[in-house]
Length: 198
Image (cartoon, one colour):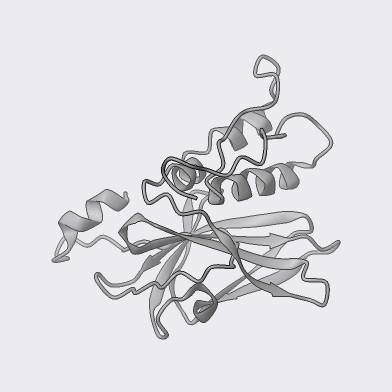
């Protein structure tokens, strides 16, 4: 899959009922990570504020529209039934999108390991929550964990803490939504390269 040929798992069901708010966000996050066409399937004349919020999240849409054009995959599972999942995919600028998906019936902490993402050991990154539109930790190394509600997903963005440090070798077979990017510093020698990440 890539430019010129994309997965099409059908239109989005966000706004059609039958799913909770968290399930709708999970649905949209996975579609974005898989580079699936984001075809709105509900009646746009009658959508709720929550539906509008999900379907117009620019940061999650940017993952779907990333010009690198590589779909995400499931990279890590835990629990005997595999209901705690991590999905991930590479983006332009040595960044990565990751989705932490809880398909279990109860909330749980999901921890993603850098080695599962193919990220070089010892790399420190900034983790950004794409649904809250804010950085949630400024210096994570080796792994990142967070509490995720049942039938919910955490869509995050990972950024290397220093320019030109992150090396990502994508592991096929992963899926979680996490996003990695470089932090921007006025004195950063890679400032011109970083501008494309904003």
